[in-house]
Length: 200
Ligand code: 5GP
View 1: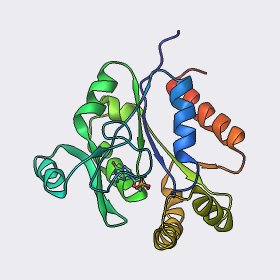
View 2 (view 1 turned 90 degrees about the horizontal axis):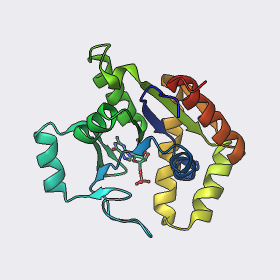
View 3 (view 1 turned 60 degrees about the horizontal axis):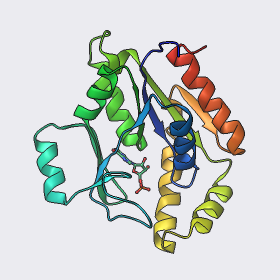
View 4 (view 1 turned 30 degrees about the vertical axis):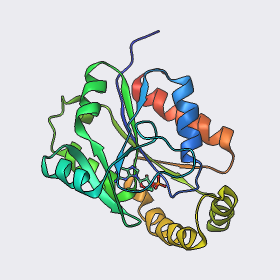
């Protein structure tokens, strides 16, 4: 396969936008893209596994890592901490592969600040691309969250309120993709990745 530029991809979306499905599809097709496993202090949901979906940490352990500057960014989302470890991203890019981060808008803002301060030659800066995934509408987002059946009604209301704030910041991203039709949204994501990595 032709050599492509390693990308540092940040993908954000309100919960319920189909982000996990789209990321799974990308990972199956692009074997040179590695998923960044975030650390979180929230409890596992449904079938989630430690070390696969997240590194599930205690608050103490999380704050200890934060104190040691181990995170590129971290944020409090829905009352829990979430953070992206620096070392795995550096290692993956140094190997010539790409890393995809699934993080919220606050986290993406902090990653942008972090990347801005790097040298232009740094792989994280050279390969940086951020994408915001939009729901077709708030009604559709509510329907998807209710259909998912993993959240309590209170959590759904909190996620919807959060979604409005996140969508208001979509303009900060280099690209926006509306997930109305999954196949179309996926194609658009692939095109963006191919263009940025130099596959086409
Ligand atoms: P969930 O609890 O539904 O898995 O994720 C809640 C939110 O936390 C999502 O918007 C997700 O993008 C965000 N998130 C997941 N990992 C990270 C991370 O490492 N850093 C930040 N800032 N947000 C994250």
